[in-house]
Length: 94
Image 1 (spheres, helix red, strand yellow):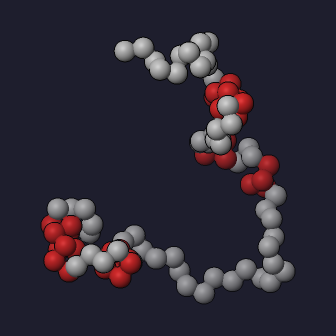
Image 2 (cartoon, helix red, strand yellow):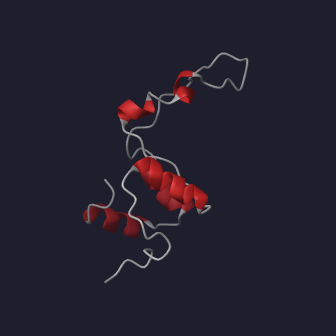
Image 3 (cartoon, helix red, strand yellow):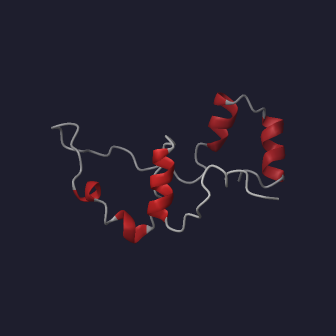
C-alpha cells in the first residue's frame, strides 16, 4: 500500500531536524523527543524560571507508585469495589 502522505511530501525526510521543520512548516505543533543527554543540552534546563520569591519547600514526599490508584478509580471515575477487584485479578492495577 503506498504511503498516503507521499503526495504531500514526495522527498523522503531522513533526519529529525528536517522532520520537525516539515511539521512546523505544515502548521503541526511538534517538538523533539530527547534522550537524557539531549535533555541536558537544552538551555532552559540550566536557566530555570523562578515563579516566586518564596523559598521552595516540600511538605510531603511524592506518592508511591499506585498509592492513590484505588481512590482515583473509585472517587473520580466511579469504579465500583467489584470492578476494582476484577481489575486487580486481571493484573490491570496492583
